[in-house]
Length: 434
Image (cartoon, rainbow, N blue to C red; front, side, top):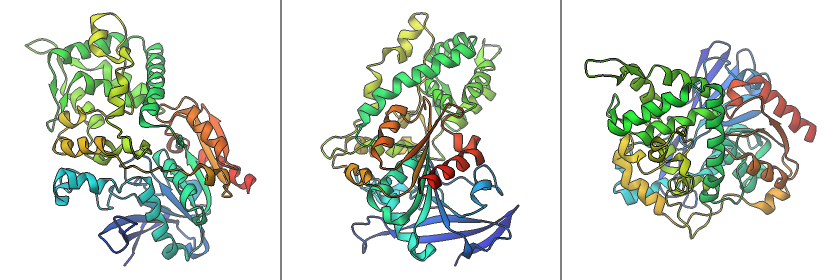
């Protein structure tokens, strides 16, 4: 039974649903989904249309808002909002090092995780929609990977959609994982150079920290091992609005004097642990490359790691041997993640099997998208670190009727930073189209 309660300005109702693990086998194993309904206090929910929110990721549960934070303020003026924890995240049959052993061997775990891509998430949404809306279509708001899911929704079940709003999440319809990362590394390099132009003092600071870690890898609280590669992965910050500033403040206080000489401070190591740990979202690391897999014959085979070899400026050893700035990496997953992070280490064999897996099916239907009749609007962020802008614009042209708002006012987290304004702009675009 759904349970309702209140927060400032809102009424929340928790929902649980049972859906098939494999929608191709509806009589087989089932998993549980969790979603939180949010309605503005004082409004009759039965009079409001539904808006389904799909979080970025993969591997992140829906944001836990307090009251009417961020874009929710605008959405609640006219919608009944459903914040869905996508399968494997949040409270929806969570996937982690503690739960996956229930599936059996690493091979069985990998088979299980093959059902956690956008195709299954969309079928989950379609399974629960009729019971919530009475069969009416709903509006979908997809942030980042949530936009990938929304694009899949347009490809496979447009009858369930009244409108689609995408923020920083228009995927390439055809790019392989190798092609995604070949485009990503030059973007990551540009973000690095922009950071160092803003904070030139960080060039020496980053080199000093990397040189120290090359000689003395650090143990972080909780058993996380900080290597040079792991330190470089802090570049994931450079894709969000205040990320460059966060990185600067992190680097400036890295060392403290000790009787044995300068050492990385406990405060620095604790901050780094919070940024690098996958304990709260291990599914992100496990299936990240599979969200780009669409060729049944081709494994992803640690694409980000292989493609990195084609970009030697990211090689810290070569950098430290010369005088170039150390380049941070970005949204890339590597085999070493499964040796340095205690939340991932028990899942290393499972990750290897997923990387070697074939049989992935295409996620998007270009012909169906070319004939699209659902109003769609997408915010595309100029030089987005996480999603290639050129790919997004090609997809925008391939989806009939899709309207874009291309902006450099926000980074990838614009729907959070810009909140009300971003959502208001997208709503105006889909209504103009409709």
